[in-house]
Amino acid sequence: MCQESEPQSSSKNPYLYLAPIKGVTDALFRNIFHHHFDGIDAAVAPFIPPQTKTFFNDKTLADILPQNNIRKPVIPQLLHTSPKDFLILATRLEDLGFTHINWNLGCPAPMITKKKRGSGLLPYPDKIISLLEMVIPRLKVQLSIKTRLGYAKKEELLHLLPSLNNFPLKEIIIHARLGTQLYRGETDPEGFAACQQISHHTLVYNGDIYDRNTFESLAARFPEINRWMLGRVILMNPFLAEEIKGLPEESLTKRMERLYSFHDDLYEQYQEKLWGPGHLLGRLKQLWMYLIYSFPEREKRLKKIKKSTTTAQYLDNIQRIFDI
Ligand SMILES: Cc1cc2nc3c(=O)[nH]c(=O)nc-3n(C[C@H](O)[C@H](O)[C@H](O)COP(=O)(O)O)c2cc1C
Picture 1 (spheres, protein in one colour):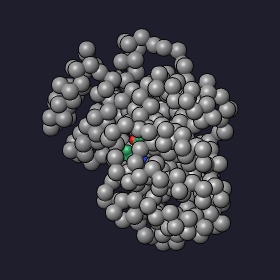
Picture 2 (picture 1 turned 180 degrees about the vertical axis):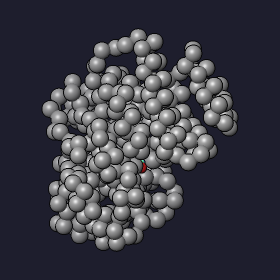
Picture 3 (picture 1 turned 90 degrees about the vertical axis):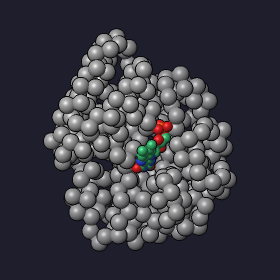
């Protein structure tokens, strides 16, 4: 299994996570991404569906199995809120050799939050504390949390953080938005700064780190932060982690060649894995919602990709995009 390495603390060598994006950053995507692009140190996997089971078999856990994640360390993510179910899955992950797992307290999807999961649990700090009290003494792995500034208001995380200081968490990843914002509106670096004042834990900054300039200004604003997470932003520009780490710049032609070859591999491997052109096109169209930002005239081109109903049409449209 690929193990996480502890980063050197330096703003020149930040530790970069690939964020979980359910429906896009699955194991196949992660392996191909890490093969074609540099700069990411580890990935948090999209959450494992919070089913009640007495045993999670290999098929259910295929996305995070070590043999399916050969290139970079992966951290499995749990969304369970019942301590018993949480422990059943966490123990299975320990048995698979994981040393770090992550608890999702950030998902904003109404289907999830209305069940008091993800960011929907943030208004109920007692439930969070009670799960941690039950679970942490029984865990052999390190636990981190991925969260938001709150579900409906910033005070929610601010009120929770002093209690979280009492638990030996590996780190807290904060997407600097509220759950009710979904993915809209501005991120709130000041809200993150307020959390930093209170938390004794290592914090990871996440949300809208669109480019190297944005990263540089956040790194200057938060000199103590060395861990960062990139989600939609790196799907829009797969070279982002390389740019942040200051790897040598390449010509536009070279970049287009690399993007082409990345897409080629994805297409080929999804074609082998997914059943039928509907699934294949559905998955690739999902990625293009982001990847299109690497190309000019994106609205016109995205429209064409979305309209492709056959693989031949799809490939023709992709070829035109790369012929620019
Ligand atoms: C379609 C989609 C699916 C996501 N799935 C997950 C998930 O499974 N677990 C999680 O913790 N965050 C999930 N996120 C949130 C991202 O990991 C990340 O926190 C968010 O996109 C903000 O970072 P960014 O601005 O770099 O994208 C998802 C986001 C999107 C847009």
